[in-house]
Amino acid sequence: MGRVEVYVVDDDEAVRKSLCWLIESADHAAIAYASAEALLEVFDPAEPCCLITDVRMPGMGGLDLLSEVLARSEAIPVVVITAHGDIGMAVEAMKNGAFDFVEKPFDDNTLLTVVERAIEESVRRHEVLARGDDLKASLGRLTPREVQVLDLIIEGLPNRAVASELKISEKTVEAHRAHIMEKMQAASFADLVARVVEGRLSQAD
Image 1 (tube, rainbow, N blue to C red):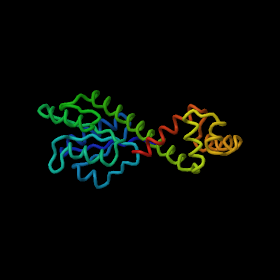
Image 2 (image 1 turned 60 degrees about the vertical axis):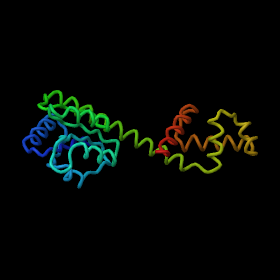
Image 3 (image 1 turned 180 degrees about the vertical axis):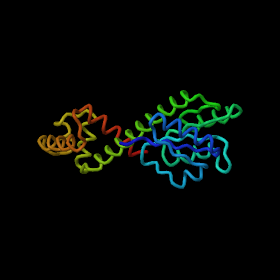
Image 4 (image 1 turned 90 degrees about the vertical axis):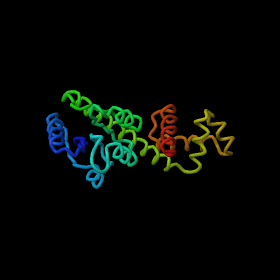
């Protein structure tokens, strides 16, 4: 994975340049946009990234941008920059899913600390999503009979009871169980249960 991009959205050119310089000085990739609309035209949430946006901007403001970004992907941490008089808006932003907020005039070290945390969180969220997608795909590769066997064994039924319930031989159950473990890439029964639970939760999202 390459460097995580940090999107900076602010209608003030001086602020944009200052933020980008600060972020790049810490060896992170920063890309600036003068408006929320300009960012949304090219925004691709498929890769880990984070967003820093001012609250008050002409056209679409920071809170509306926050809502739109999170509607596209909840894996994108959004940091809101607020002036002293906008603390109420900052609180609203946090309630609406913002990762954090930084008050103007901001301290460089404080902002960089927040950015570092946002980058780490973006990577973590994308890893969770990718794992969920992998587990959903693994569940999707199970045959209908394997799903029946799986449902019974994760209830705690021994192979003999599963065989009796499905009216198949115990050896057939053992074979299905081995195929299930292989398809789910599970290292143990406990790992299998955890993967099934996580995968089915991802299917329900």
